[in-house]
Amino acid sequence: MYGHPAEMKSGQTKFQSTKTSDMWRILAVYFPQTNADDADFRFHLTSDLLRFFSSPQAQKIVDQVKEDDGLFILPLDFQHFRKVCQIEEFYAALDEKPKDALLCMSAAVHKVFFTKDDPMVDGAKINIRLHNYQESLIALKNLKAAYIGRLVSVRGTVTKVSTVRPLVIQMSFSCAKCGTTITCDFPDGKFSPPPKCEMQACKSRNFNPIRSTARPIDFQKIRIQELLKSEHHEEGRVPRTVECELTEDLVDACIPGDVVTVSGLIRVINNYMDIGGGKSKGKNQALYYLYLEAVSVTNSKSQPVPDDMQRTDTDGRATEHLDLYSFSPRDLEFIVKFSEEHGSDVFRQILQSICPSIYGHELVKAGITLSLFGGVRKHSMDQNKVPVRGDIHIIVVGDPGLGKSQLLQAAASVSPRGIYVCGNATTNAGLTVAVVKDHMTGDYAFEAGTLFS
Image 1: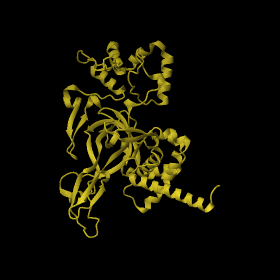
Image 2: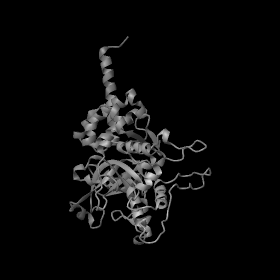
Image 3: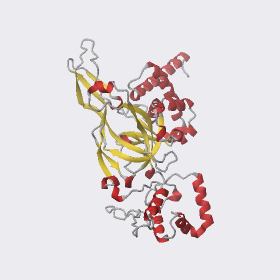
Image 4: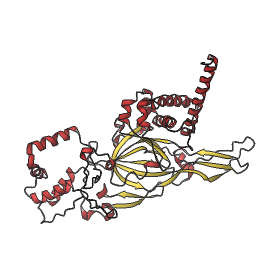
């Protein structure tokens, strides 16, 4: 009735062998170039993650996988994932080998998400977008050689955004002598044709690229500048910046002037690789510069707003997402106490607190205060009309020596992203936005001026 024990054992062995072969087949998609030393580590880590994602408690996480233009994305909140997953080997690998750890997680989710009959689904891959990783948040001034290969998170203002360009990550080559087709991967976007033909009787070194087999992905570069009002900013020095590379679904996630939090891997590139002088010049240089290979991009404009803080208009739709700044518990406690102490006289107390060195001028201070708080953005029922902005512009006119500049400097100092600029000492491009040329790639990009920083 139950079968012979030897037959059952043989059936279990065959089933386990099938599962193992499927696992190696999926790992080959995420690790096309691997060695024997890393193979066992990746297999065991993926197996542990597979058992977790196959459990009922992880079903909600797997259900969050979404498809966008043929790309499969899994947004993953690290703080929530840490509470439900207790695989310490994964967190150790995330600290030491973050790229391998994320790819192993992608392979495990791949096995669970897609059907068992055909787990490859036309070679699709799942990208893990890990965000809210507070333990990896560091200041830009700490980005040094010790963090190469590590997963970090940085927060800053986007000052430069390049155009979206295709980046080829895989292409096939045809041997010019025997016609053998060889497929090559381009790690980090480096063009790497095969060194020689794989046929024993050929060994030719001349190849013709088969451009129709090229596999491109979207690629974009942005530059992030440290926040001027952050506790890590040092007065009297030029703000630090870092270049970030965005791929696939992360492109166009921000524009110049946005405050973003980017989580990614610290990588290095030779500073002379893409500048003239031939290949020998790049090889003979030991100078590299750091950049960030983005894993996730969190824009402050797109942060979800709690239900009790959303504004709705007459027809019940939310007007817009609020651009929320992070308040510390100390800030929130002060706001509550301040409102309780002064009650209906809050606005007058705020006026007296702005630039106390200038006596009087309460009407001017009131205008500056209202400009700092801003208004409400109005949306028309007609979708073709441009929304009325909620920002308030003011002009202060008066005789010399009345303190106009001091009032404006005081407003810039209390604003979260305020910068004081003298109008006759800058150009229109410096105030708004300028088109600059990247000396590394020759590409043109938008660089934010003062008004968007």
